Length: 210
Length: 116
Image (cartoon, rainbow over all chains, first blue to last red; front, top):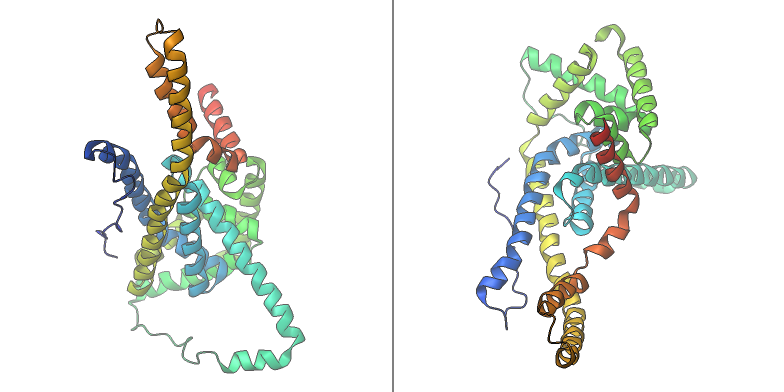
């Protein structure tokens, strides 16, 4: 990923008449600084957020949409809040987007079950090459890591939503219990319960393979 | 963290590092879109508050001028008026009401840190 992505135009030509340049610059500086801080924050979490959304949704485009929505929502509603608040807020928004997407899929699946004609139409329009792997063969160590990851992802995807969230925020995002509780919008006790159940179930499912 | 959690984290980190170029590029585009939104939002907010700020400023100036004849003795009238302008023109207080629950958590977390 290009690390030095230039910031979109952040010059704010407001109040340009009647204000001297120095005053305008002093007003714009905090906004510019906030925008730069937000860019650094988003750049630091976007790949991890995408991977977490991808594990929960098992679909690249849906995961990208969820991350993009979460970024937009954070920027729109909370961009001016102190930067320490962004991480739990961002993950809270992202988890809501993931849940929305899962809910939408359930409704779609129910409708499709009622309308078999539509289902066959939908299936015939699907990209028949989408599932074909497009990568060259991996070296053995990397292949083993890839397989272990796929096994973990499958097991994670089978966990109930809240257990999955608790595990990913605690382990992948390295949040403590209080931060995870803020991101999940629940009590710290609930986080501990969800997390411990998640670890227990994952250990059971992965068994000796791990 | 146990070995199990360590291994899960290492696999996850590895998969993040190996994210393909196309996905990285799409994420960069999404980020830039969000940042443009901040820019638009800032402009919109300023223009929305400009008339309100103007009215408030006019009202405060009027009050200061009306009081100026009777009570010249208080030397800090100008400073007070400037503070009033700041308070009236600041939209942060309204924004705070949008997420009371989150601020309560922050407050509790800060208090816990101080005591523990």
